[in-house]
Length: 274
Image (cartoon, rainbow, N blue to C red; front, side, top):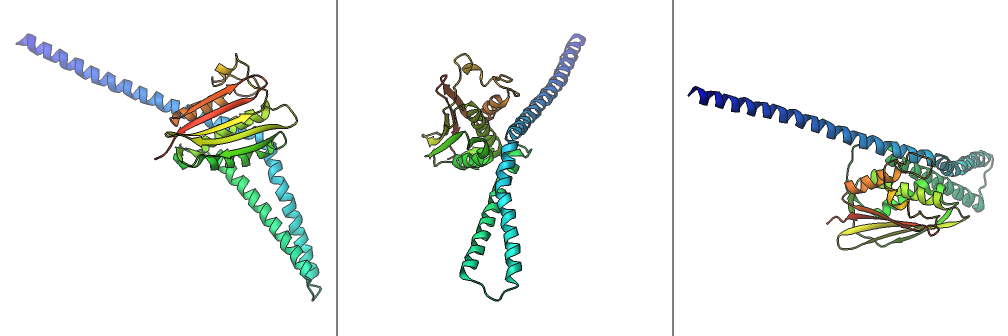
C-alpha cells in the first residue's frame, strides 16, 4: 500500500513537473516566435527606407516639377487679377488664358497629392493588413513612386490582362514590385532600355511579370539572388530576400529567369480571391 502511494506520488510529481516544463518551453517558443515576427517587420521597414533612400532625389525632382509651374501660375494669377482690377474690360482671350492657367495649377496640385499619398502609403509602419486588391492598380501606384528613376533609362510598356483580385498587404506588395523595378532600372546600362509589365491569370492564381532589357544575371549568381545579404551591388542585400519572404507569406511564388546580356524576367504568382 505504501509502495503504491509512493509510486502514485512519484507519477503525480513527474506529471506536474512535465506540465510546468512544457508551459515554460511553450512560453519561450512563443516569445521567440514573437521576436522573429518583430525582426521580420523591422527588416521589411528597413528595406523600405533603403528603397526610399535610393529614390529620394528622383522623388524630390518629381514633386519639384509640378510645384514649380504651380508657383509660377499662382504668381501669374496674382498679377493678372491685380491688373484686372485696373480695367473695366475683360477680353475672351484673357478669360481663356486664365482658365488654362488654373487648369494647369490644378493638375500640378493633383500630381503632388498623388505622389505624396503613394509615398505615405508605402512608407508607413503598420501591422500587416491584407485586403482585396487589384494588382494592376498596385503596379501603377508603384510606378508613380519610381517613375523619375525609370523614365530617363527605360520605356515602360503595360499589358494588363488580369481581372481577378488577390488578398494582399498593399504596402508589402508595393515593396516587392518596387524592389524588382529598382533592380531592373539599375541593370539597364544602355541609353534607353525597356521594362515590360504584364498581368494575367489562370484558374487559381494572378500573375505579375516584370521583364527588363538589362545586363542579365550570371548563371552562378542566379540561384543566390533570394538569399539574405547576398548582393552584387552596394546595399544591404536584403531587398530580394525580403521580397521572397513577403510573397511566401502571401502563399504565393516568385521566380526569376535570366541570361547574361538578355535581361531578366521576374514572375510573381498570388492566389486569386473567390
